[in-house]
Length: 474
Ligand SMILES: Nc1ncnc2c1ncn2[C@@H]1O[C@H](COP(=O)(O)OP(=O)(O)OP(=O)(O)O)[C@@H](O)[C@H]1O
Image 1 (cartoon, rainbow, N blue to C red):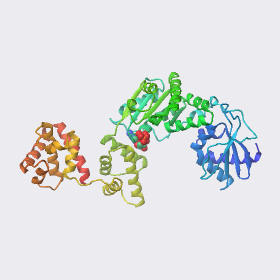
Image 2: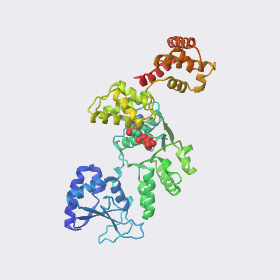
Image 3: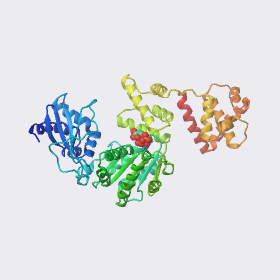
Image 4: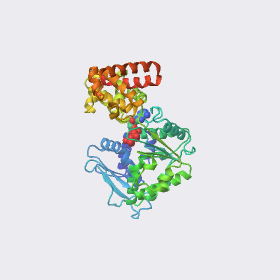
């Protein structure tokens, strides 16, 4: 190792140290040896292909910064990878950056190195490395709002976090639609364990990354390292498992890793966009294992939970927004939490760029830009659709002559709101409900008012609906 290379790498380490945690620093940077310096190109020697990829995936920006700070704009970094025993070429080889867009190319042609270290084996992972986990610290239980939509999954997750591998929730499978908080919840479990009293190797990985790592390990002849690495994990969190569909070799590998971890009482946590029974393209033996533990779903949060999510988010950003705006957003965005957050971010950005207060007018303007066909007027059509959805009856029945009790009630409610929220005359309202006359509408309004006084459940339903219409008619 040249003393020049040594000095440059020392400088780099000084920069890196300021940008990564102490743990990451000792795990991922201390094991690196500077190999040589040629002009403004520094070659560093890393213990394995896997190690190199990890650096690339997680620390490329900080490495670039360190090299540029130390060697100037033309600074280059080259890697020398010490070959695993499994690699038939049995020689170190080199990859370098910057190439093209300063990204590191995948090593294709091994080039000999003068120096080589003893082959790195995954079994020799040190305890620092065991703490590396890919977890986002912002995803905690504290920031994960509880509601009916996620109660089971959240409490099972908490039980797992308290006793990983020991409860009967192994594996824990969390499923739900896009943007409903699967990743947040499983990472919260991971963070809780990581911050707990016992030192555990918690690893979060997306299924896509898992597949890619596996493919690369086949290509590079280090499948053994890959497997060993995953078999050492105490808590494996694997996101979007549906991505393994149709990838038979990866499924087989995952099957072995799963069995090994499960037998050794290690915790496995998975997410999926659908329940195990609907996962197509996954081997039966895997699916049956997924059902060993607990499967819990996430639903779209209800209105109150959405309000709480917005409040928490705004609080964490240190931003105040009035209650009517919060309610408006919670009512209007009922698709998923990610979209809700998107709207909040747009609102904050808009207000701060234009130096205006966040109020209902701004919120409505933003919503119009985001959801192009948003209708802000409350019309009879909208009322009819909303009421029939709410009472789970057919829209056509609402407008027809049917005399079934639940349909009559829903129809009267829709008439009542048409009178309250639109400018239509009684005659016109009657016309929209299958050509009834104005006295029928008057009777409907009277009946709804009476029922609201005597029937609590009915009153709650009407108030629920009223909120929806009020939001639109602001
Ligand atoms: N109950 C909740 N409390 C607070 N924030 C939440 C909640 N549910 C979801 N979120 C937030 O919504 C956003 C989307 O959640 P997340 O990425 O976890 O969804 P996902 O289900 O994994 O999505 P995908 O299907 O795209 O993988 C995140 O910013 C997350 O913090």
